[in-house]
Image 1 (cartoon, rainbow, N blue to C red):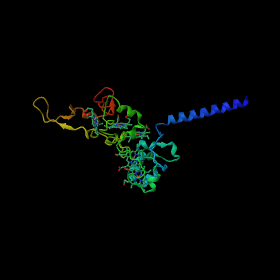
Image 2 (cartoon, rainbow, N blue to C red):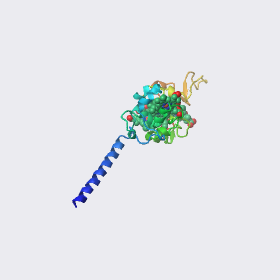
Image 3 (tube, protein in one colour):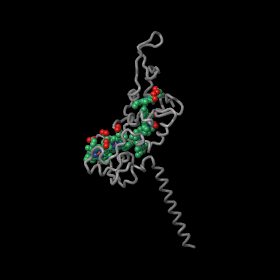
Image 4 (cartoon, rainbow, N blue to C red):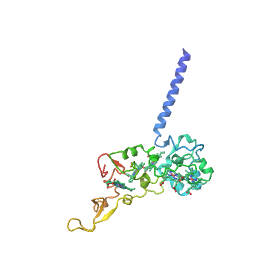
Length: 220
Ligand code: HEC
Ligand code: HEC
Ligand code: HEC
Ligand code: HEC
Ligand code: HEC
């Protein structure tokens, strides 16, 4: 009888331990990557190793939010942000690096971002959205995954010029009394007075820049 109680006690304790590690992994989910890309036979080396050959990226990266990424299965004490996206790099480093040499380059594929950014994935699936899922544009046209700029939200450009890379801004020539000369148009909309309000996405206008449930101009 005692023996059974003892066994049951152990089973309970094991169950509790499993539960605790589950809860732990959930609470750190935003920082800890469960499934980085795989590279056969390669192991993790840590961010510092990349510095030797990719100093531009490596120097800027520690200030980026992505530097907080940590791989639970890597078994290293340092940071493994680089390998969270590029996969374990031991073989890449061993052969002296190079393109296509035992390393994953996610390129323009948003799937590489969606595996962690589930909320963003949902935004791009809303009825009105920037056509990222359709492959007409991609995350790295607006964001730098390495944070080499110091802009908020890892944006490539901090002001309206980000949007103007794709959305032409035209200045009206004037058409009788209908259109005044010197007015600034973006799309079909006169933006002359609006541009003073700040960045397109933080001015209280195109707030839902990834996508919106209802508004075709992504105001909310
Ligand atoms: C959040 C994911 C992510 C992290 C973290 C990340 N990268 Fe990248 N990296 C990318 C993506 C996406 C590209 C492709 C960008 C493109 O094609 O514009 C890329 C491209 C590169 C390239 C190729 C650049 C070129 O000239 O084509 C190098 C080298 C690189 N990363 C090194 C690093 C290093 C070193 C680190 C850590 C200091 C790092 N990356 C961290 C996502 C990441
Ligand atoms: C011994 C030097 C060396 C080290 C160390 C090194 N790399 Fe590279 N890597 C290169 C070279 C050379 C290239 C070719 C592209 C270039 O010249 O920029 C390259 C290319 C890449 C690419 C682009 C691959 C492609 O197919 O487009 C990525 C991504 C990358 N490295 C990531 C890393 C990461 C992450 C680390 C650290 C874990 C790392 N590298 C460490 C030398 C190195
Ligand atoms: C391995 C998981 C992972 C991948 C893959 C990943 N991210 Fe992130 N990203 C994070 C984490 C974690 C943060 C920091 C969130 C926090 O701590 O609040 C973050 C933050 C961001 C931020 C917000 C920065 C801020 O200041 O709020 C942007 C933008 C971003 N990521 C874009 C991307 C893009 C673009 C890609 C694909 C190239 C990508 N991420 C791939 C995990 C990831
Ligand atoms: C058209 C440009 C554009 C594209 C494409 C884009 N983003 Fe963004 N993203 C932004 C802007 C602008 C912000 C800042 C919004 C703010 O500050 O209110 C942002 C913010 C974010 C943030 C911070 C959290 C949030 O939602 O404010 C994350 C994470 C993010 N983007 C991830 C991604 C990923 C992943 C992709 C590709 C699947 C992507 N973005 C594509 C422009 C873009
Ligand atoms: C990389 C190119 C690119 C960038 C950068 C970009 N857009 Fe777009 N945008 C598009 C595409 C493509 C569409 C879809 C147009 C279509 O389907 O005809 C679009 C559509 C829109 C629409 C819907 C109305 C319309 O004209 O179709 C708005 C509003 C919009 N973008 C705002 C923004 C804002 C705000 C930014 C800056 C944060 C931005 N865009 C940055 C490519 C871009």
